[in-house]
Amino acid sequence: MPLPKKKTSKSKRNMRRSHDHIPVPNVIYCECGAANLPHSICPECGKYRGREYAKTADA
Ligand SMILES: [Zn+2]
Picture (cartoon, protein in one colour):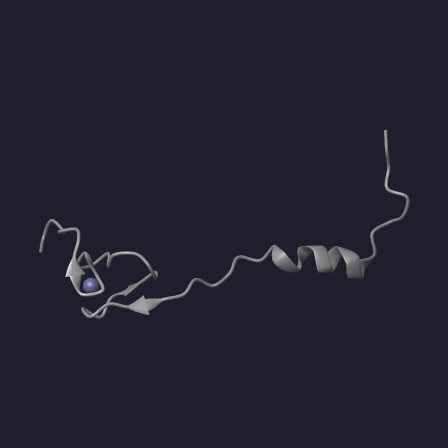
């Protein structure tokens, strides 16, 4: 079995794990005031950049 020659130092281990965190997603606000992710239709009113793409059941 191949084995690493040296124990990974705390520094190298932490450098490797620097990309492991989950990034905080961007939040944009629709004209209706609801928060949603960029490049996606609004979950509240179904609009994207002022146009309606998906109708919600209660709207
Ligand atoms: Zn909306």
